[in-house]
Image (tube, rainbow, N blue to C red; front, top):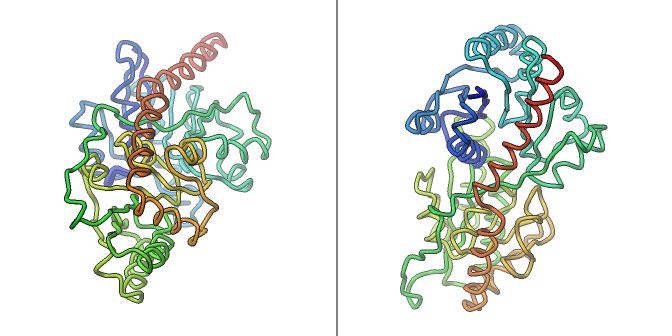
Length: 371
């Protein structure tokens, strides 16, 4: 078996990137590949990996470019290289592209191929600052996230686009039976409470919708990380809810470990940042409204499985939400189409096979070069 080392963004919480990494390492062909995961901290995701019998190592990898990391980053890189050497690792794959400098250190020392997984829309400066030109290969989750890489000079043939996947056996259209005469239409946004996820915009959308619809409830699903920036933003979101007097309309669920049930309880998902939640909602038979960020336009079939609307267009998004509240048959039809599209496009098997094909080519080329 070929040992592969993975770097995870987080070990203490589970976001979309962690779920995608979990799908990958637990569905690899174990006759060919032997995965191990490095997490920067311990917690719920690291424990989930251990429960799945995935070797998991806790190793703090401080942000490479921060001044405060200058005294510790090289020691951390050396520990990572020692770990890769100990396990005779033949390839390193980071699920968070901010770890690219660490990959470069391992690549330089051990001459093994390294892969960076791009889950965000990057600027040209970020592409240059994070050594993308030195990566053996890059996996982008959308054509849109590939564009800045190519514009920055990365050869297109060095980049593969692999859409996020979802466990179709777990996320299923098994709706919770509710009394439509008394229960409210439920609209959710899922993700860590952080500026990138734009929960404040979601509150603005809710404010517009409730001006015309009373039978609706909005759910902010997720929690903020324990960092100054995220705590500040969480406070901002809650203060906005209070300012608009929407406490009875907007519900903060906190972190949820039961995402399949969460999706079943919703009638509609709104996402303002893309991500794997789109695939999860669609697999659960729910329509999705999103903005043209990241993989959204490539995952949502506009007008069929939901809507892709202009970025941060609060009025337009609110209008689409109101339309689906008032036309339950349209909402149900889109939900059915969402499940069918998910079955066709977002299976784990399809996702993992595409990545394994990349591994095979890189390792074969490395061996042919006599490294």
